[in-house]
Length: 479
Image: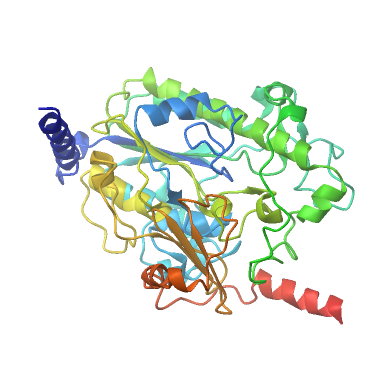
């Protein structure tokens, strides 16, 4: 009887999601969409358990009433390219932007590809957007994709550095500033979005809200630092032997970047302080998310609005002796991704691999829009119905031209442009300490993952890659 009941329950949920996905000719019958983007947030949330002391009550509550994709990964581990992928539904291997670079509208491969906002607008939605959604904003030919701007406020910055060593980039400062939440851009955006959610709309709406924290510089008001005792914070495990079995391909990734190297962080004794600031920034942005979610809950739209929350990429805080992003390791690729709302039942997280490329087709199906032939992701509706539904396709992440990661449920394969490789078994090695590439007993698994590597990859659109400049400087220094 118990087995039959469970089967009926799963069947009922699958039917519910399928019914929600039926195409509708009546835009008024479609759900609204609240699309929340967070910048540089890794898995340090309560619902992903990436850090044992992180405080994210609002996102955790959202995860409990929806479906979290606990094995979700970005398409590119850097801001602008990742967001282009999400908004277009097209991978970097097709559009050619793998690093901080061009605007969406500058990429020839996307000339005929509508942003998700434009696609929903063309299918009867009223679009609103505020904060950092596309890295460069909706400009040029994309301006009309948004019916109403919620603004893109800027936070104040201190007149003098608070904690960074003098020779570090201005971006890599941190501290308790400003004094009050009301002075910050994210708080202002949250309240603007909250006010908009109280309004009545003639059409279903697609509201994009992009929060900036925990992006550097890590300035948030003092009360968010007060949530944590810096001296008692757990720091990521970082054994001295961790890099011994790695190829050299990405070990110099910070050579050109503004992020400090791990050696510089250690030299100046800043690891604990930076970790404190990152956690404080996460709790602050969680509060801002809570303002928006509370407003939705008290609004006329509470029962007919789908919510999707995601981050553009992960972030290292010393793991593998690295800081920030751009790598193809777990800390840089793994991101929060969760859905909640009508016909999405509360339940266990999904452990199947998923990609941020999947957001676009999932929302199209859930809202009953016509299929978009440009999309390269896969709808997550089957996993929304049942988190145990298997998925054949792994999550693919690309960083710089011709470097790729393939992440399945239990394994990660990394293949670099010089043909060097890394292979990790996440069942026994979640920290990716033990590179199994070259182990003959793992060759079959390696080959199984390798068949998903992109067969054709568009070259980097920029005339000169940042990584090429870094290598040039490195060679010049050696000479």
